[in-house]
Length: 114
Length: 111
Image (cartoon, rainbow over all chains, first blue to last red; front, side, top):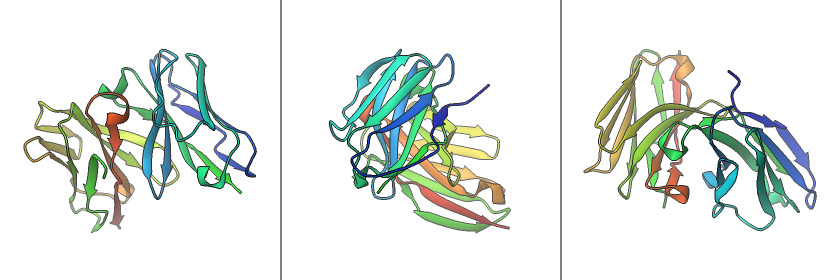
């Protein structure tokens, strides 16, 4: 069974550009999470969805960040405009039933904003 | 400060030895989870222990939970070089922003 798939694995772009990160969760998982990992702040929960509906986006750092889940098999995290401080590894994870069950992580997107 | 904090920050042992990592937290929880992260990869779930459980096992892994001390420990027995990774605890109080990862313990198992 395929795991959580993220693309791209690496992204390097200049500040001010729009960045779109993509995620395909495990089929049958009702919850999808977006995390950001940095050396300074560790792993931070940005937003999570239940059945394609955003439930809590209080971890999204600024209005420059937005996330969508148009269907059960696809989600995007968009940064517009990007800034150097957005450089981090962004992870997508999915689970069968929220925080009471194991989360399955993708291998992340390493984002570098120059 | 963070809800879950691992101790030690880094641990270096010889292959075959046991490794113990600790996680402390501040408020009551619904469950506590341990994850492993290999370099350049995503996190892999190891064990979930609920607030009404005291101990769980999975292969060479043993997790304990002491809710009175607000702490948990992860024991890896007979360590292998392949166990080299960072280990994180995550605590769940309720939903949303009450799910928090600790800063992790970096384990090095030397052959």
